[in-house]
Image (cartoon, rainbow, N blue to C red; front, side, top):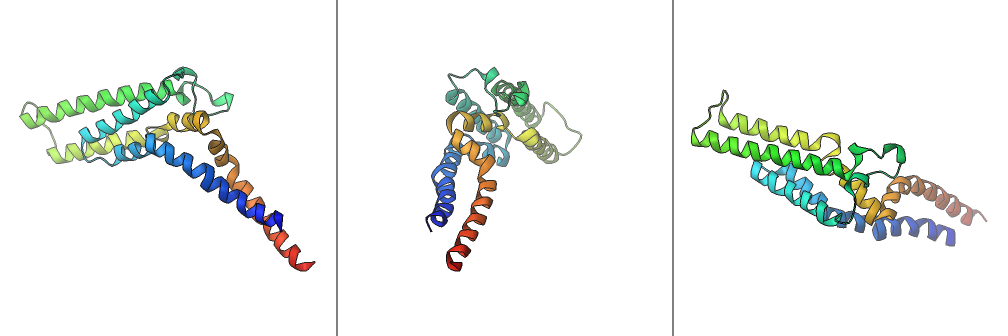
Length: 184
């Protein structure tokens, strides 16, 4: 019976006591702002949210070497594209592109630049292009996500790797224990 209780209690504790609180912390710092950046209806709104994520990255990882802080624990995947340095450089280029697009929008509205398509079409296509670009390669926070979990919530990181397989094993063990307790 103790085995049955452990098989039920351990996954519940792992999920509600470790993983979900860590995920909530991550979302308060980064995840919600990433979602907000995707969902913005203006270039300025997206720009603001990207700057929040970038600023949070710089504050959170202030004592870390971005070139050697990775989103993965596996040495064979620890390269520039999986580093905070790559995420930082990406933010820099994205903010530059957003700034240029905002200037271009202002020039169009002031009548200093003409478009071959209607303004609303240009605006929506350009904004959708930013959204698509921001979701490419794992999203705005592709390196921050793994790096944050590995640095600040490693137990939650590893729960993602073994929680569901362990849960399946525990359910089978619990079922066997339950049946066995009534058969004897």
